Amino acid sequence: MTPGTDTDPSLLATPPLVTTRGDMRTLEFVAGEVQSEMRLSRPSALVLAYARAMMCFALFVPRPRHILMVGLGGGSLAKFCYRHFPRARITVLELRADVIALRGQFCVPPDDGRFTVLHVDATAWLAGVPDSVDVLLVDGFDAAGLPPALGSSKFYADCRRALRHGGVLAANVFSYDPLYPAMLGRLRLTFGGQVCWLDKVAGNNRILFAVKDCLDPVAAARGRACLVRRLISRRRWLGFGILNRLLVLALVAYLERRIR
Image 1 (cartoon, rainbow, N blue to C red):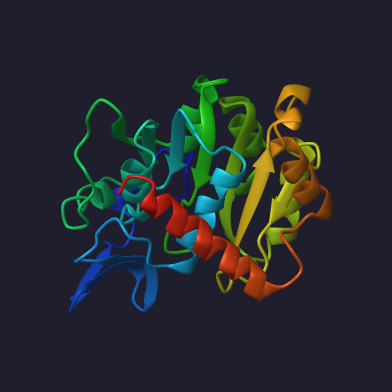
Image 2 (spheres, helix red, strand yellow):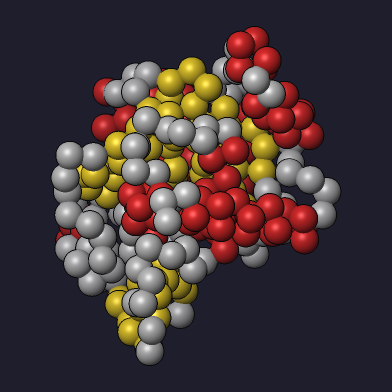
């Protein structure tokens, strides 16, 4: 089931599969297709390349006050942000109750004053929180892939409305998805063309970054807006996959050191 339907998808979807081999634990919705992966010895570490790439939102918003996530999965993004952005409030929207029930197996922290997991339909919830989010991470896959509702014009409009001025949306999509060109077109239209991505950093996963409004002249004077505008104008990040991968690894390593 996709978001926006009346029937509880947890009653109809295939139960998630959790597998542990040695130091690694995985979550799958379809056998053989890893949705999330965790190292038991380092539960907060980012194992999958696409998850590391999504952390490049920090190049746009290095000190977010509120991070909103669509999709919990095994909690990789949530755990990393909870640990390495200690001043940020984190809200996770998850449609499936059976996925939320696995949070203990994947060492997802309990709810507290700055971390909350909500069992809600993100497509409905987002419409009620205008101008309240600095970073919005969309990683809401099911057994069939990315639900169409999470790539619709309405959803992207709600995402943009939820973001504060200068906020960034980071969306994980499959480059081979037949709906990808249409989704990219909608995203560009909704965000006024302020969209870029990382090439060749995560296999078939493509991480799209969309910024709400150009940063103001004061931010430009600090140098951050110049980088953002240059990346957006090129519609991609650097020209070579190896440089992109090194950029991602360096950024994640920097974030991991910040609280040590």
